[in-house]
Length: 246
Image 1 (cartoon, rainbow, N blue to C red):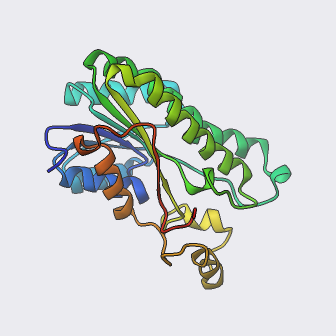
Image 2 (image 1 turned 120 degrees about the vertical axis):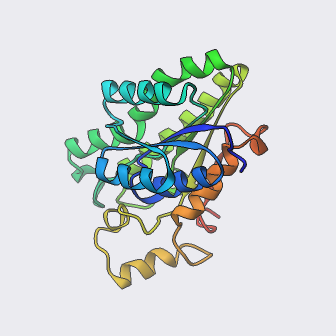
């Protein structure tokens, strides 16, 4: 029960890694807002973990503000934010990715971190406490070809994590990131372009431990970094990748 008495918002928690993080947080005693653009998925996970569901478009300022306000009203105080919501573009040469896809990837993966910080950091500063966890990617450390703008967005997130950590440390706010390798989640097919046994085998061959990241892996790492056990850890982008970045 390392998160007992804590409250948390997890974005993109209606499926995949976000759902795994929400489940682990609830199991560790936290009250969780399950936020997702897919309200059906958010409600299902929220029911499962005894949390509350919130529809949010993390790339939209008004929607993010409404999410933070709803969490503040429900919880009274927001202790933890996990910026997990993310998307990618289909694999392809960098110059062939459409401007629309580029804008959407940067809005969801990068602008969302700014929008949630704009709304939540003042509340955490007032409380002189708080933890923000950004779900980045091994793509921001050891990028694969043909996912250029996704890679860049995750590299941005890692740099944002470090600079947020430095700026917010005097206020008692910690900021970290986790870098998963590809997982068997709804985004996997998009990363690979198509889902075949041959392509899966090729992906797995680059991971020394020989398997994809799971939602449970992400939940375990996130619970540690967001708990008081990690009270001296800030500005870290922790690879949860089975050795992919070695």
